[in-house]
Length: 98
Image (cartoon, rainbow, N blue to C red; front, side, top):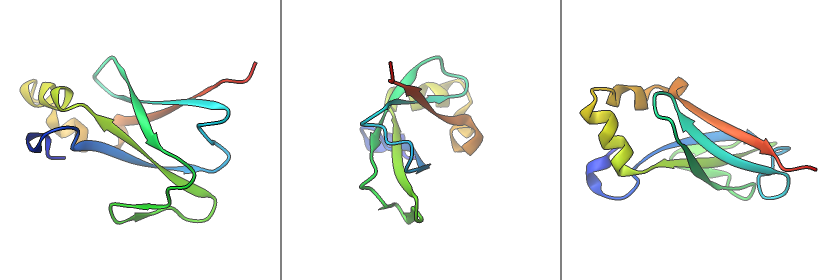
């Protein structure tokens, strides 16, 4: 996390089973505990390696970027440490099937 470097340097990387392919059946968002807003998640089944993290067989990586202004909100409210806690980040899959 380095929000002072400019746009979207605060993010989480999620290792997701390949059965959850977001582009076909699911809409994917990310929420951060303590902030009432969902954020767009990038990546897909073709992404296997990023930032010294390798997705094993049957998995792929998704990245959820937090806008810098939101990271600064956490900093101003003395909650910046919450962003470093992996339990604060949640990936949400919404089924798009009829």
